Image (cartoon, rainbow, N blue to C red; front, side):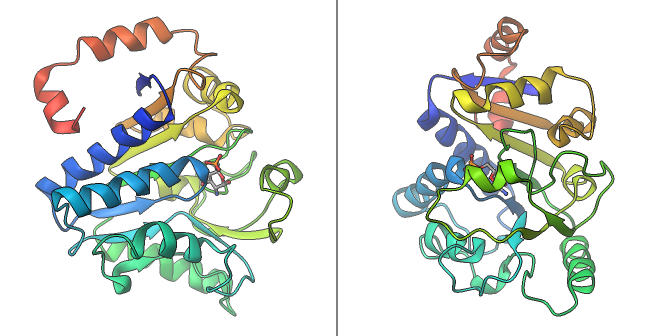
Length: 260
Ligand code: GLP
């Protein structure tokens, strides 16, 4: 796992956007795995800027989001589809028909989940998966004790995850989420965490034991994962000094490949 410690949340977002841009310059038809949440908002702002000011082209890109709420109409402002429309689809030249989210309104949810998995496979798999992390170490909506081999399916949110959303927001108890096993099949993963309240989860993910109690720790099994954190989110990492040294000595060819 590569851990890159940036000074603040803006640098983390810019670093993530640069990596996406670098991939699209090499592979314009890349398949992106996309995430929602407040950590990702500045990433989409930067991607929109790169599109507007530097011509970053999303016209051949296909996207798959990690998760969606069950039972919220797609135009509900609290749905992740609405989030993606507002922060991404309306700001770049991605084709709406190539933007996929799990279907939280399907009559037959298991069947819709199987179709989602098939669509990812048919697209050739996910080239780069963006991820956030919950305070309890969840990725997507894979709550603690999720099977590390899980696929896209329905999950019930924990009370703690429900409480992390603003009180005025309507949050259904059920969600449809890519599984940990689905995420591990992405060719590359890029996990972002900012702020002190993520520090414990980041330390458990990177340096703790591999355990379903911390679903993000499954990324220790992924051969190409980068964790982008700000100083606050890095504050509980025991080996922070080593990660800084590795970053400082990163070979030029790797820097170029990654857009660092
Ligand atoms: C939700 C999302 C996750 C996200 C997490 C953290 O649980 N399903 O994908 O990583 O929130 O969100 P935030 O970035 O707002 O802290």
